[in-house]
View (cartoon, rainbow, N blue to C red):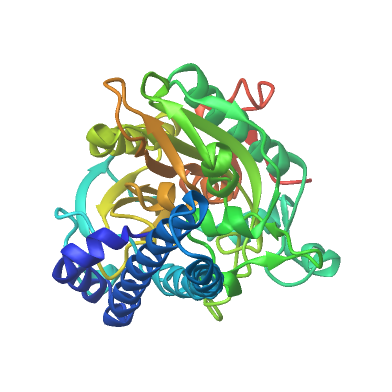
Length: 425
């Protein structure tokens, strides 16, 4: 959530950021409401001041009986005005809050301006793409022939965009989850968490999923939401808390199933294991000092990259432009892994610096060492990685001519010594 003070003092900055994001928010209405709020606060303060003066005169007996009677009535009338004014003030503040929530985060000055994903900027690539000496198969075809990805039964059990993962495929997902968590906790300094998979509306609002993206969420009958990412419960760990400065930075990670309705993806990736309603992901979240958040973003990206490097999967890093960046992010990098069957890179991780945007919504602060007013932390999040998409990348990049799949070296011990997923006899 934006600071209303920023909107007051630097309207052009906010307007430019919203425009570059292809957004459309009526900013002047918010400023008019804010001016009305401040005028009302001043008016109520004056009434309270006069009421206190009247009460003092009455209490000291410094007025005649007739004047006292008039002052008592006047003081009661002032109390009624204050009461009704407070009701109006609350309504104005709620309206400001409602209107300011849909405004996206202010873009960092280094975020490139662009219309859509075509304007994203490639930062680097890792590992040369080596052509196969046979036509590479799509992961969906490989998974079906290996009998590890069963789409028909997933649909039968649930509905479309659900997949039953079987045998060595299920073991591969479990191996990847363990490998990723071990890497991030043992080498990168993250603390592992096991958060709730259902969260309340306040938590969803804190990270920016609500109110803007409600149609993308699964909601239960009692008002809870299935998490679209562990970003939501992890970021809300410190909601409404004030940390000490020496408690920063905090790094946390979690494996969770994630649930997304994919409301805006009709007709996209209907074949395969890419765009599912339920998928597994290892998430990385940071709570950091504002002065170091962009340095921490680079480290976060490196943490996610290390997973792909150890799996020896070709990938590239993109800096997202203003027209493609997420709602809560000020600056964002995507990691895209190479998929031979498509002859292109596909997203496997998104790493964002949300600055103080989520911290304001969730009310997460820290107390500076030198004292003074508590400040909002900066929050960062990234996939470390999306597990299902990593399975897809392994199936496609490690496929053999006969349709079998070699296991990446780093995963062999996690697979109980299995070195290959063979075709069923």
